[in-house]
Length: 188
Image 1 (cartoon, rainbow, N blue to C red):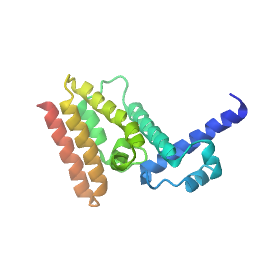
Image 2: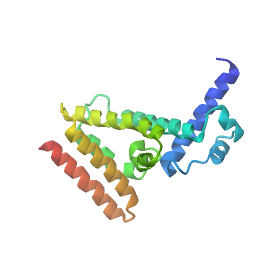
Image 3: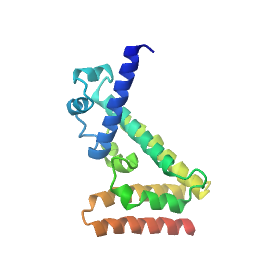
Image 4: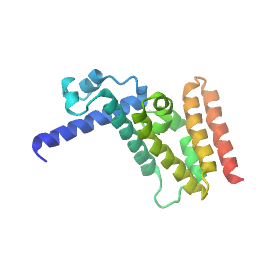
């Protein structure tokens, strides 16, 4: 790869990383090409050398956010210990995860936005949701993924709701109640 192609690839990566951070923090609709390009110290016109459209950028940034969130979750685990459902649920439905949408699970941060987004964005998130369900099913040691579907849906929904509720005690109660319910379902 020539020097200019290497520079272009690095610029694209900077744009994607910043866009991924911005959409996790403020949502898909809040992404502004002008402010994004200013943030990464590139010209607004240079954007089109990297992406065909804002929609393409959003889909690529969503993929980046989902992939980096999964990598962070994987890195936080002890590789010498098998992942238990209790540990996964406790980590996902924790105050620290709730309070850090920029660095936490991009599914939980963006589920409502992507539900209203174009088919391209939904197609980007769908396999990550399926992968999350599969990981939970594997952790449950279930051949049937029904309990995993319930657990993932409850975890993502509880995380989203807990971020909306402004009363910290009530928000904590949402996390705790769903966490305890999932753990009880798993222990049955």
